[in-house]
Image 1 (tube, rainbow, N blue to C red):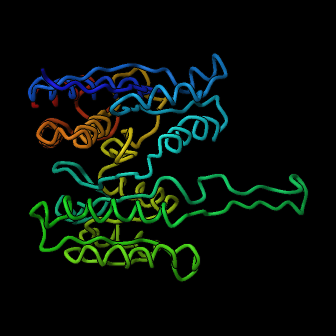
Image 2: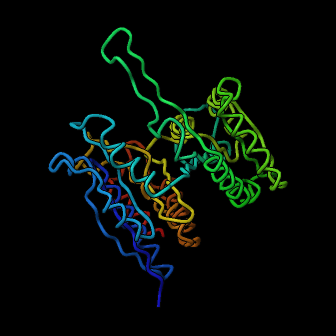
Image 3: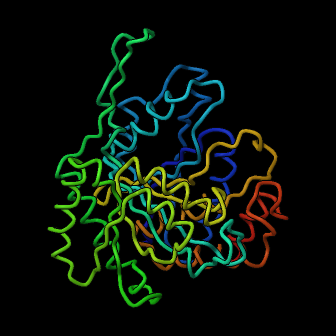
Length: 359
């Protein structure tokens, strides 16, 4: 009997359902070729549901989601909902409740995709950012006093435990060992770079740096480096080829991965995963709901399809993931005129069809 994976679909809002539909099309093609099953169950969490019912994400829903092998997310957001409500009430709640403590963001430029960086190509823009996903300023520790007065004070604290830091770093070292450039035949060494701000944020990065050195001693085959985050934003533009795998905090990771997305051709090709190595992980394109393109069959689904590829890899379906990766690269290189919405030379569904057929 073939193995079947149960996948929770959260298509979300705006163009989310459109790109997730193409992702499912490609995933089903891969499943058919490599002889495993996919059972999709759809959930309507998002801005539309919130506007109609006032419901975000109940604890009972989280418990139900724990029973799936993975979650496949489109995008959540609504122009009529105050910023922060959906993000905290659905996205962050999911990540924290399911302890998805790793955010995995490959920064890879496909052949045929334009980058805004002059004289850079796929050989230079090819690295991965591992962002700690459960701590930092996102945990909501803080508050304000005397709001609305000239003496108002606002405090939001960055919070990390040694356990959070250790497990993120250990994941990063293991990932570098198996997915670094040397492991993939692209370089002479596997290198893991810790990105922080130890000259100013001394308490936080004293913890990170000590843990990095202590755990790193267990991985003598991996070269360890450290960079301040402000320097990294320069290097991502000037010399991105120096990076192999980066590990960093929640806030810094949030920032540098968007810069990385711009260098790899934009949010239309930027895929990501929120990983719990021992639980339920969630995979999503990095771009938002793109409401201006909703219903026009013009949005780029490559990021969503790439997120599905990351999901297959996490599920252990390595051959299927590699087939999807090859198919994406081939269609991007030979068929698509651009990665921008409405400029691809193909519709959303045509891109999905082409990649599925190539698989």
